[in-house]
Amino acid sequence: MPEHETPTRQVLSPVAEQPHVSQSRTGFSNRVIAILAICGTVMTLQQTMILPVLPALPGLLGVSPSSASWLVTATLVTGAVVTPLIGRLADMFGKKRMILLTLVVVVAGSVMGGIVTALPALVVARILQGCGLALVPVAIATMRDVLPTARVPGGVSAMGASLAIGSAAGLPLAGILVNYLDWRGIFWVTAVSGVLLMAAVARIVPETSVRSRARFDYPGAFLLAGALTSLLLALSKGAQWGWPATTALVGAGGFLIALWVPLQLRSRSPLVDLRVAARPRVLLVNASSALIGFALFSNILVSIQLLQAPRAAGFGFELDILEAGLWMIPPTLVGVAMAPLAARAITRYGAWTTLLIATVEMAVVFVGRVYLSTGLWQVLVGAAAVGIGLSLAQAAIPILIMQSVPPSETASANGLSSLLRSIGTSTASATMAAVAAAWTAHTVHGVLPTFDAFAAMFWISAAATLAAACLVALATTMSDPEAK
Image (cartoon, rainbow, N blue to C red; front, top):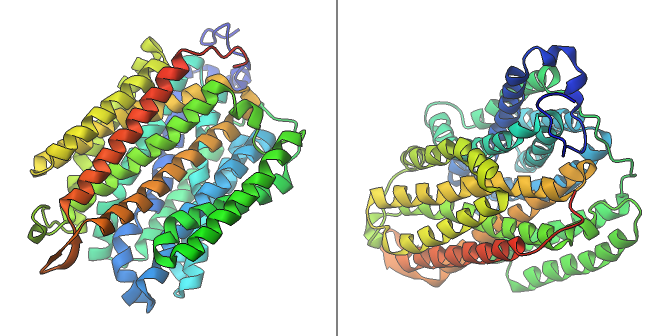
């Protein structure tokens, strides 16, 4: 057994059989972590870089603002729908293979977005780009298979940091491209980066020998895709389409889920192993993931809107999108700096304890932000403090998932966790729209949300993270004899 393997490791890493790896275990691990983390950064960039351009797109494309918003909705919905599907395919046919295939699709979408001019074609391009959001859980599962056991927490923490970097860098980078170059540069950045990453992954990241021998569940995939599309459209477009359409979408989604669940329970090769997902500890950590997803998006969304809010509203700092994006970089770097500390905390105290500390810390900070958001430094410190907890949580959750499922289901299990986190972020966006409409004031800039709307979001986020803390505390009192 190689020196870096522990006796509890269930599946030996395939890299142990590769002669070129044995020359430098540390160097090999660092290269794999770096390449996969950069993949996460680029996939997050292509999601966030469209946001600063969105207000100008109606004029550039000659469409309404609601039509232009499909360029965001299409990516979010696609990412949520394909994440569990690609995760399952990765477990069956190879994680490296699916990473490369996903990058090919993202590059194709990026090139298309850089060339076409009509809105429908741009929406298709964004749909293809949205497939890239499925890459992150597959990359995390790859780390479990090919890295020494001791390096996995550090690799997962680095992946979490890469997502934070992508979220923070997307806004100012897009602002620079829009101000000094053509707005289509946001597509070409992803296209060029994707091509380079394909070459790096093909050369450096090994394929894993861990495979699921199951068949792909096509009926389950179609039902799940339909259900998620209906529910996520209700969350993201409900405010624009009104209650009748929203109710119909929710009803359709619920009906498809009602068909999907018994199908999964009867299937010998389910798309999602609901029996594993229903294990108490797995269920609780996935529920926590959804709540933390809400907190993650709420922290970014509210902070950016506070920085951009006009002073005429009685608060806010009236920054443009580039200035607000640049100011958000320091808080993000605090979360990035936490990545190695998160790995050490998981190694020393365990993933459950780390996640409990993270959720309690975020709940306390969100309450503090209700009362400490009047100065620029308070907004930035508050965002950074939440980012500390998010960094710990995003490192702990994949570790807990991987500890609780068989090695052959790692990618699909992490995909389900990512899906629930995406639902949490979509819910945060819809909640922000609702509270912004509930608390408004008439100003020289028109009707604007008052600070009470932002305070409500902080209170809701505090409740969400406190609920996550309660779920984690409950899980620590349970034993899970079936965990593998």
